Image (tube, rainbow, N blue to C red; front, side, top):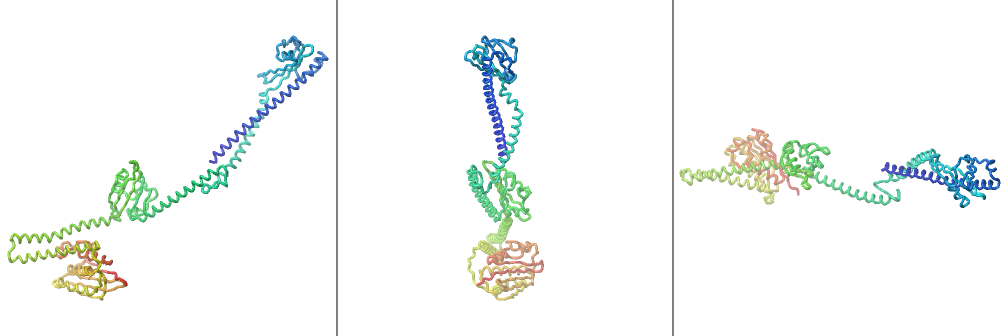
Length: 558
């Protein structure tokens, strides 16, 4: 901006100065030429009148005896013959009767003419006066022409032009700086028309208004960006927005954390988060305009990738990628399939037995004395089936939190004592003894669910105990919680299975489990029953050294 303005000012001033100097020289030279021409003509006329008067009174003696070197004087008779010439031999000169000034003098008494010589760049001025005897006195003088005068001062003109150009350049630089300085000093963020040229006031006013709009738009954009970052950063899901060249335009922290990657650099490629073939193919499909999904495995777990193209008139401008942690979902899916398989197996086994025995009875294939035994088997399998169904129903209710909240106060010590008595028919045949210790703790909760928790823990302590072993139940009260601890001297649980024993139908030793009556849902009911009361349950065990289950239930404060 500054260079262009200075250049224009410099060019303008230089042009104007040069033109002004040339015009002034031409005008002055023309005026001086005209002035001196008029002065020369006047002087020539005066000299001619003086010489004519002298010749009129004195005769040719005046011409012979007078110094006429200043002008050329010619005396011409009435016929046009030259009688005298101050510069040439009169006898050698041609007749002058056809000269315009002579003709005019013959007719009017006085005559003038001028002739220009391009060779000598001079103008000859002739002035003729008619004497009383009809002869003509002509006075001539050479006058320097206008072009000759210009040529004579050409060197001075050039010097003047150079001087004018130098002054113009200096003046232009000073003027340009003076003009541009206020413009350069304008505060574009806060333009003030009172501190600049009056002519710039409309521009500065519009600039100030434009700045206001731009500042508002920037504030709105920054606020929108902050809201976008705040929203995306609060998401548990990963969000990535990338252009059509796979460069990430936005990436929240959940995205790179879920992918187990480091925080990506600015303008990093989306493929820097994961270089697996599944991920690459999913992203490339989206960039090709096709919505794509895939599940990839990372050290942190299973991740579901959903990539959708962002199109404009069938042109893919970028992609939007959502990353979700589906580890638990995948595990639940596996558990669901296992649960379905286990339920089918557990239901099928007693039903197959019942059907087989019933078929034998219906076809008369059973002896009369064996009918009672076969009937007992049917009842036993039916009891097993009913127990399984009841456990599944109880577990479903606990899952759905659909058990009515009919909480009552109960003494955990007394409840444990009653359950131990109830389980004696199961423990005494195997020589397993039970003991109860601790204190009376009043807990408010669902008595049915608490009963199932203690019953299943004690029942497991009997089922998986050694012949002649023992188990103990301890009830105690800690600050703000009640503790139920069931310990046994049984076969124990290998460490690798501890984390899975609360899963439905999970069996540590499947071959042994076939010999042990049960549905495989006892510990799942324990876990969900404890969660129903906002408590915790944990198991500690060593193989062949027994197991300890500890249940902690929060006590309500009044």
